[in-house]
Length: 352
Image (cartoon, rainbow, N blue to C red):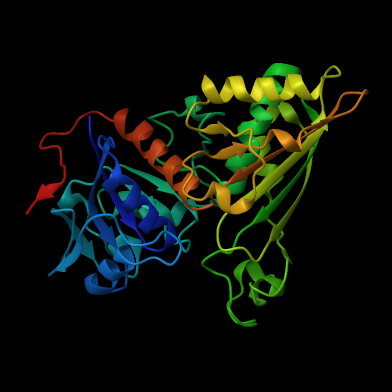
């Protein structure tokens, strides 16, 4: 089954989604429509040329109100508000809300109530979605009848959660502390600008390339949503001046003392088994750029593992904050789309 999806916002995440789908031999999804306030010519240029990902490995052109990607046409709308996008006209089943602007569950729901889509995935730590679903942790709790607007939280939450899941299942885990060092984001500033700073924190308006910037992201709370057995968490979050590649660290207390070798073996087995594709394992000494274009939520770094005689444990993992998270968004779109009743006239790529 191919799930027909629409993407609202062709920014960093939206373009990553498009590249991933275009490169996959059997993606399981079909991008039939996108919406962005930019012209189709600018959208095509943004897909063809990317300072981080490089040139598009195929062809992208603008043809009237369509983007043509590798000879497949995608209807491109230019609406500023989600309730004005006629997704149903293109047979869209699942909308990925990737603007970063419409992260409230009620606003995102207008893709369904007004646009005619059937489900929505918000590409951010949303406000009041029907469910937070982290692939590899609690995605099996998806309820088709109750969950219309869902969020996979954030890239940092996904990286931390998959490591916490392995520790929790294998050794028990409590008294958790987390830390995330996040690479430059689209909302970052080249120079200081205190107008429009994200989430009312003036530090987020400071020049991204000049400082390590603390961020009051509630990452620990969202890890607990996915894994409520953990209990109370403490967390810290920093934006760092690297172009791509982020780091997540998690420390806690296991139910019994464990060795470094036990922890690393558990992570390697999970990466090769139940969390394959979501958790990756690399024995080589790793730095942030090494995780570029890695599709996993977390690339586990065994050199960072520490344990203590009283059951203390600390683990470390890298993640490509755009690419890995975009892959999880598509996983989630497939999950909820494949569990929809198949409509008549199921949409797919339209060849031109």
